[in-house]
Amino acid sequence: MEKFENEEKYIMATNDKDLKFQLDELVGKPSITLSNGVFLFNEPSEASEAEASKKQKKNSGLSEREQAILRPLIKKMKYEEIQKSKQRVAKERKKLGIKIKKKAKGVNPLAQKKKAKLEKKLKAKSQKA
Image (cartoon, rainbow, N blue to C red; front, top):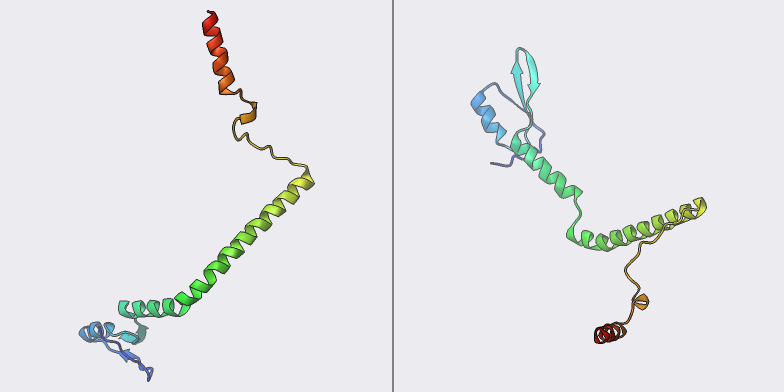
């Protein structure tokens, strides 16, 4: 595939099929076909579309350096947004008088019996019996 620099802005017009296929391999060249006295603009070739999409991605994307600078800022902004939304929800709950019950996290270790005392009681019961 050859790259065709169209600095003069020429448009190729032909009815020859072989020449049309050869021109479709060139990148960045528009072509016209004459059919029944009407000029028809041909669709861009696949090569031209591929080249155009490459240029568009190259021009619209950020460089690696810019991305490295923006990543921490974006993370910080997201964290701040989450915190603000949590505060906003808490204020709305307070206004409406809605309380959320906390789920039990587990057994309170201070409320349980000590193992040593439990073992002594079991030994005492087994000796009496």
